[in-house]
Length: 126
Image (cartoon, one colour):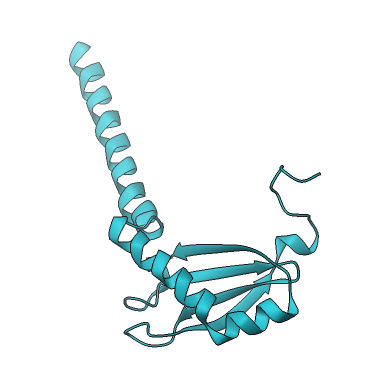
């Protein structure tokens, strides 16, 4: 009886550990940037702010936030899985590198903005 309980607990423990490792390896590692990837994303934010597409957007719309993200699961090679999102009160513009050296950031796509229906989320202004 004790052996069956011990084997059951061992199998459950191995199963949980495999699940946690798989979740980390396949999900979290693909979306959470390492320290060097964080530095690359920070440089990409600067290049985005200096780009012509950003300046055109800044002239027309109220820029509320700039966010950076990484998605290795969407395919492509370095640096094409990095992106910088510029959120305005009308839309969110997604900037990506225009070549392998990432010499320039370009506005590739745009999407809905949460700020179209909501006010900025900082609690400092009333």
